[in-house]
Length: 605
Image 1 (cartoon, rainbow, N blue to C red):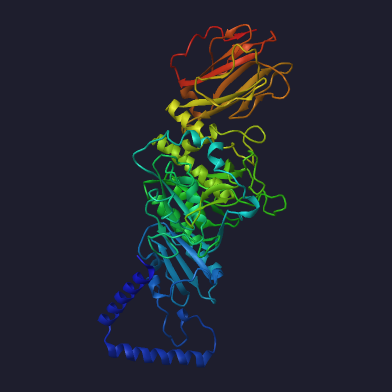
Image 2: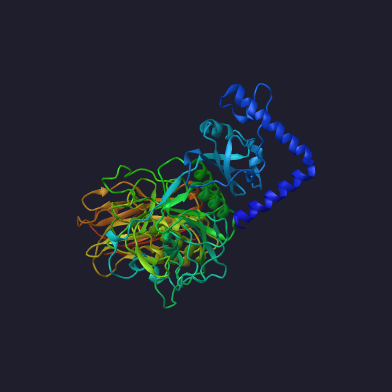
């Protein structure tokens, strides 16, 4: 409902109660007496005594706030230092009544949602002391000063190039656009500057959201950022118009939440509105993924609480890592929030050359990367534009999460993240790193991993002589070559653990080096660029759930062909014979299940 209409209705109700309780004459007399007392107080003291304390003669005490309709509506752009955000544990129409605040302390306010209030306190009120007092209230989860958080987009000009929507081919979405068909929609909540829901490439791919700026269910986008972000996820595919979203033909919908962006190009979102939007999205069972293409470097306890509730509600929460990664930027390498909160997928940006965009923020909280430089997407005008920033790599990953959940509705948030990480293309130094996380998402590989098996299993790839790194293989598939006399030089193994506490470690026996020592969870074992052959391998499972599974593996060895299957850390291959490994198969089965083949001779020495 429109904020102004709601406010008028509630004022009328309050006035009706007053007229019923008090005769007109009594009100007039009280008013006169009250005026006399107020004048007397000023005359005697000429001091700024807080109205709620009264004078020594017992002047009138200021009314306690029962509803924020008692005060004017807050202006989110003025007196930001005097505004506080209150997040409540319980949902209620007028939670503010439990805070024991008075009209002397509160000069304006807004009930943003049933769990979030935005309150502006008077200049004479000690904001820090009041916040400390409110934190003691058992119904208050968090209290913060209100603030603005910047979206993580960059100006177009330095990065715009002529070309097509390269981002989809780069992550394999061109191979999955028609591969996933789900009846019930997977909804992605986009918390941003709103959305042009009438864009020809967006129509039909939205569900109800909310505009916290206007207090209406009809969402608009004056700034344009939210429309560009949403297009990366769900621009309509195969309609002969413009571009396409990461979702392809999967039934993915956008729930837009407008939390800022009051004019074209406005990059600021309001913390109070953001918190309310996250909590609203967390309550909706059809919302599976939340995208947040914004970030800041302050401490936001209210934002942390809201994100934590979304995580507890089982949502996949995705955020942009930040655009402060340039070497000259004082913020380079720092944590940006909400991306750096626990259980949030932090996404960095790459360019079309598969290297980190220079602006992309880096730190040990970065989980994945995706295209984020000169990506083609929808514009608020109804047309299209190239956009740059981690603001646009984040929704590409959020969209990929939604596609994975559409492909298998039984997956939880942790399993989705694990699948995307285990099938990502490793970039930069071997293994996870601060610049690329686990690597560039490969949606085609992630969907293939789901379709290949609904159980726990490994993903792995090998570095082959004259070929380089091959694509990722899954549970029982062959990686390498046979009959071509090409040596394996390195290997990386990850686990698709579907939320189980299950990892993998492995070591290889390398020509001229011997056993290298164990590597784990996607790290490189062996060498590449040194022309050294792998001769043998040992693989074993790790984690508390390892007792529930067995890992089997066998190798194709020079002069021997396929050897038998080794199990749980046993050696596979040869030693002391100077023979190369040429291919490998790996599979994981429930503990005690039958071996995939003979196990008598996995190793020759």
